[in-house]
Length: 323
Ligand code: ADP
Ligand code: F6P
Image (cartoon, rainbow, N blue to C red; front, top):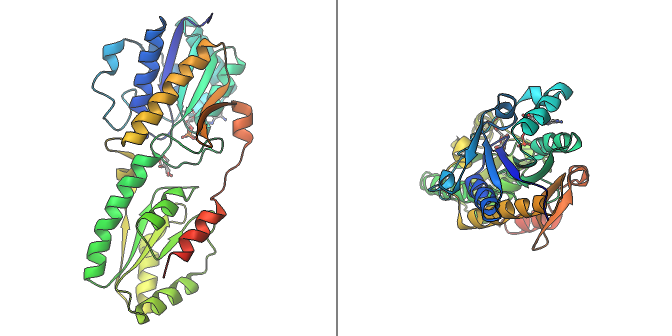
């Protein structure tokens, strides 16, 4: 039997479409098992300010289809300190929270790890549009974000082709090129620039644009990950060097919003429910993951020690499809 009686749930770090589905699943799965649930608003910042509310089944009604997070999210430097973490653990105990589900990215998991060490049972659920959590092949929000970016890039492509322009479209991913890689394949772009592989050889890029134009290509779409950035100045340099009109479009935070896709709703729901199940089994300091087609869980320490890179074969396939 589980010793956990009251589960807290918070979202932390960058929001991601599907987080509401995960919150809803935590709340309703826990209630279905006879547990109490408390929502902690604004991540660790809200925990330290005791922004804690009781949640029932209706608290999460009408949320599964909504982007963002109904619990709000925040970044909190105070919680990176030992004193902040000690206070956070005390506040959990004061409110009877003996199990905590943290929905967020690697940074949020580090916070969860600290709380677990201070005696609060914690489970992480991976939520970030960047897909850059090493222990899992799926993160909440990536599927929606990449579909949003794909739709936007299709639209830019229409006008780019009409005007026979070069277009640089900047997608999110400060440290990771997954959105750029997936859109590169899905949108059939001519180039992707990603932090994991960028060679700073702008002349080679310019040469490819000139060569493609000579071969009769009517546009040249470059998908540039945020981690490379400088899309506007790059566009000016490309236009000056090639004589081809070039425009930069930065998609920005639109990629973080919007109705979650079916995949994000379903995977997030399953992960949220599994987090509750792990707490009921007496587990702590673990993160729910989706690996090789299965839902699994890892020790947070192990998960945070893992590293992840863009799969070389996928990058190579992208390049071979550009003709
Ligand atoms: P993400 O969870 O998406 O990676 P951040 O890196 O911004 O986002 O982390 C979210 C929050 O997690 C931070 O604002 C901070 O409150 C907490 N956090 C990050 N790193 C640590 C750490 N080393 N120890 C404790 N808490 C941390
Ligand atoms: O959610 C991840 C991410 O979108 C990164 O790609 C980006 O660098 C970062 O969040 C930006 O977040 P914010 O504008 O909220 O600081």
